[in-house]
Image 1: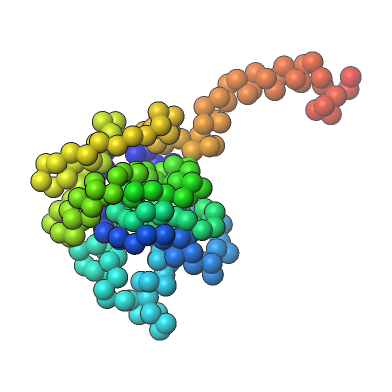
Image 2: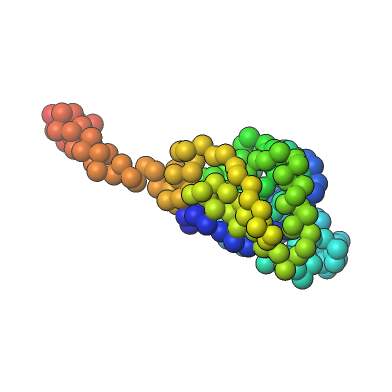
Length: 206
């Protein structure tokens, strides 16, 4: 998993409430177990019309936001079904951070497991960031995870909270597999002890 430390990028404004996982990645794209390639289907039903042509006024189709890496959204982002394809699609598009007043719990947890930083802030502070994002590619924001700060284009600073364990995992690029591999030596010692004490469990003669 790619570590998240300090990220600077264009923020796209999506001031919609209750954006569910089916809006993020519609169900017809859930057949794959590959994490790559889903970015082109992110917000598919809002980005494209019935003929497959881009909807010009959708935020991610506007020239200023085609390379956005931060999303500023409305409350209850990521509600609906628990599909992990939703953060996969966001990450494959290039989104590394989502800022909203609130998130659905399962989606919130899945973001951390896939290297995306979800930040919950009061609506008043989200509104300030939406205003910054409305300026397009001329205004970028910086998310400083070590300092737990969001720095706007005019020098304003917003602080945010994050659980220490989640912060540690993001800073070090640790998903569930990475966390397990961090204990590889202890696991090997335990397995060797079991082989010695109970060899029949491993097909050896007692």
